Length: 305
Image (tube, rainbow, N blue to C red):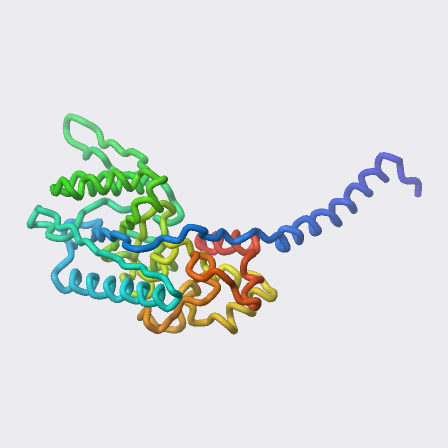
């Protein structure tokens, strides 16, 4: 049977693609990117401003909830200070709990969050919200808003203390991150069950869902510049083995079992090196200074499932 020249070309292209595409795909998994390092670590005092957010005016923080958040937060920041001291650093966290002057809300700042879910907040930058209710004279108005600025705009309107009002607009200026040593912690009340217990918003805000000391400490150390360790577990190889065998109870890895106390964990030489606490890194941790790009993509895709 005679095969026409153009068919031969099509067959060659077909086999070429079958060979090249898997090779390119495989190379993506082999691609490594450097882990960012902090060369000017945050020192001395960090001012931490805590806010309790609820999506429902009927579900505000009672004294039991407030006291628990204060207790868990103090435990987390005292522990970070102690770990910093262990690595030869002086770091103190000064905590503030702004009180809403409206006695109906007490310490709670109400804001309409999208389904009150950390996972939703983490993945989606915008959400639909009813900005005007339907009446006999006008139709319902639904707008798409960016939840992060909307949240802080809402906080600004609710806070009556002028000294606190000055803090919130400063949050929107990204270049103040290392200069002002200011961290905003948003405690989400009644957050639905999610794969995410909390996360760090680039800038200087931490969002907490389960409000346990381990999560508060983990996300706050992100603010200091630390990368996640568990990203390495999303691909095979030496780095995965190092994290699983050598760094199981490291604060930047996922929690071990049901241990929610930050005191059950520690800051390793690897994390201390990435945030500038240690000047040298141990030889066995050097492979962790590069992370697999595809593994990171797989992690982000897992959030959608």
